[in-house]
Every structure is written in structure tokens, then in C-alpha cells.
Image (cartoon, rainbow over all chains, first blue to last red; front, side):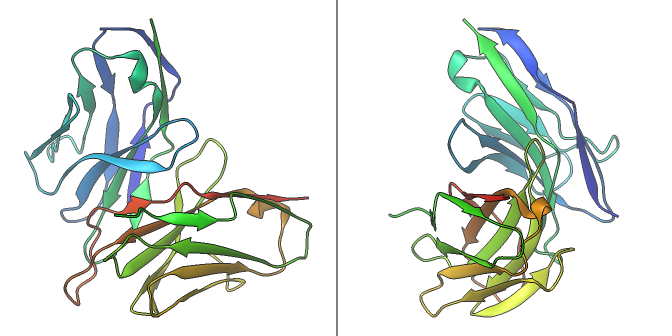
Length: 112
Length: 117
């Protein structure tokens, strides 16, 4: 079946550090891949997405590349800020299956 | 443009009771999906509504039911509440311009926190 595995948190970094949050998936065919972010007290927001192999999604300095050969969609940012503190979710979706399948989330804490 | 809204924000019920949660979709969005998010976990898909009909369902029992209205707002009903139903319930809306289901960008509301005692 389809599934998503994320690295466990919390991940604690200092401001301006480099960020990587690992995400790997299991799926048949060619799913779309997403990163959503949940800030404290707020709803989920789409951060970026990629719909086919080798696509790179990017937004707000975050990037993730759809790697079919390693079934991965790791989230990266070159220099994190305190305001990036949130929970990050990796998800996959299939057009024929209309639902999103989610990882467990990774809490990110950025210290000044 | 108004985003996705949900009501109530918090709710406390006792085991065996019934609950109705409400969602107003973003303007122009005709598809609504409901998710259950237990503490410390990712959301689990409950079901999706498109044009007032259930369009797909996750692994949830029939006591979880829903409705979508002509204005595309939606309700989630849960009967015979159990302690494990305690969770954050998320509603997400998306535009669907063709007859084919899509997992295109979904816009989430802030959620309803349900506590079952």
C-alpha cells in the first residue's frame, strides 16, 4: 500500500543553520508529493509540491526534489529562521485516489 | 477571499454521544475533504465530498458520516462517540474543474478539537 515515512522530531537547530527533513515514500505508479506546514495554533498550509519525477518544488526558501530512484522527497532550506519553527508534514497523493496520505510530521524548533 | 472556516473550535462530548462538525469551504471550491488528526500524528483521510455526494472514503466506520450542501459547505457527523475519536478534525477544500478526482492543492481550515470523555 501507499505510505510516507518522515524523520522523527523534534529537530532543533540554531538560526541560519542548514535544514534537511527526510521523507521517503512507498507507492505504486507516479504519485504527487507535497510538503505541508502547521504553525502553532494554525491549520495546515501547503508549502510546496512536485507532481513528477525530478521536479523541484520551492517556496519561501524551502526546496524538495522528487527522486523516484530513491523514493524520496527531502525538504531543505539553506538558512532557517526562528519563524520557521513549526511541524512539517510530507504527503503523497494520487489523482485516481483523491486522498492525501501523510507522514507523522516532524517538529522543527529554531533557536535564536 | 475567505478561507476555509470550521466550527466549533473546541468541543467536549461524552462516550456514546453524537457530534456534528461544520466546515465552510473557500470561495469557488466545490470539493471538501475531512481528515482526523490524532495528537502527534499525521492526518488520516475520512472522506471527500464533491457536488453533494461522497466521492471516496478512508478506513473509517459507518458511524462517521457527512453531508455537503449546495453552497459546498459540509458537515461531519460522528455517532456513538468513542474515546479514540478524540482528535483534531480538519476540513480541506479544493477546486475541481473536471470530473476526474484530483489531489491538487487542498486548503485547510484551522480544525475542530474534539475531546471525548
